[in-house]
Length: 233
Image 1: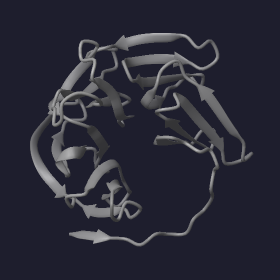
Image 2: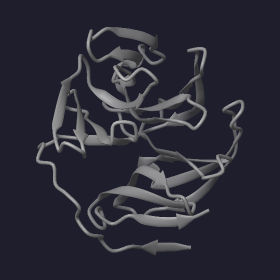
Image 3: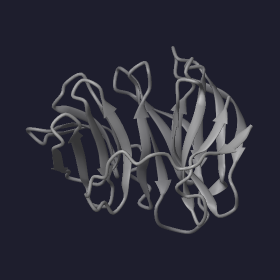
Image 4: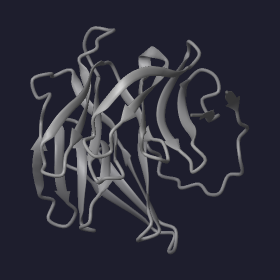
């Protein structure tokens, strides 16, 4: 069942002037919102309690990132690889650079799963179009980086169902969001199938699943770009 939902009430506006704002995270411990401006190579943290904004200049562009148990350390998918980044010392501890040989690629959308593993996908930023040299990766608890999905153009929209048994993932240029069976214990995926297809000029971008199991998908394109698409598993 597909439904287009109208725009809800605007709660607040944060005038940051982002070039390419992405990867919004809610930090329950600090009651704050995190996100990245990819092209500006900056991470932002906005406190709901104090209504204060912190801007963090990063050494490279940030496609996505995740919070860790250390409040001063993030796990970051920089454009060139995945690393731990210490906010105070600015130390970069590289975990994986699986596509260092692909100069047209950079890391894009990603997030932490419920088991604490960090996932991040890449995209073909430059070069001949169409190209499917990008992939989706998972950094396991021991730090090893595993390639989970391949032959992707722009990895996007990664999220999981409330029971954790279904993974959703989009390859934006294909106009399609896919479903996979997901094993929470091993992080293995299987049984890839189409979940929903967007219109020709509308591209599926970031996604989230709410408590009722509906998918909220941000869409880039000429029409309905500000309207979330709801879909139920």
